[in-house]
Image (cartoon, rainbow, N blue to C red; front, side, top):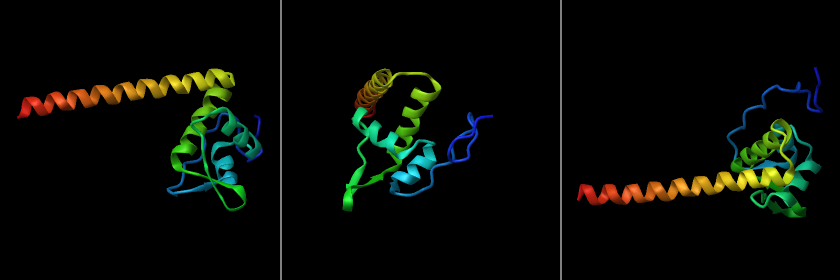
Length: 116
C-alpha cells in the first residue's frame, strides 16, 4: 500500500472538514492531501479558487474553497482529468447548477401565481 506524505494510505478517505471559518494553506493541504505548492498552482489554473490574502500575503481558505479543492483533486487524481479537462468539467457543473436555480425561480413564480 502506498502512503502519502501525511501518513494517509492511497485510496483512504480524506478527513472531515472542521467547522471553521478560515483555514491556512497548511491545514487545507492536510485536509485535501495536497502539498501547498500544488494549491498555489491550482489558484492560477482554476479561477473559482480565490483564497483571501492577508498580512504577509498569507492565504486563508473558506469552507466552500476546501470543498472545491477536494473536487479538483478528485477530478485530477482519481478520475484522470487534465487541468483543462477538470476546468471544463467544473464550468459544466456550475452552468448546470445555475440552470437549476433559474428553473426553481420560475417554478416558485408559477406557484405564487397559482396560490394567489
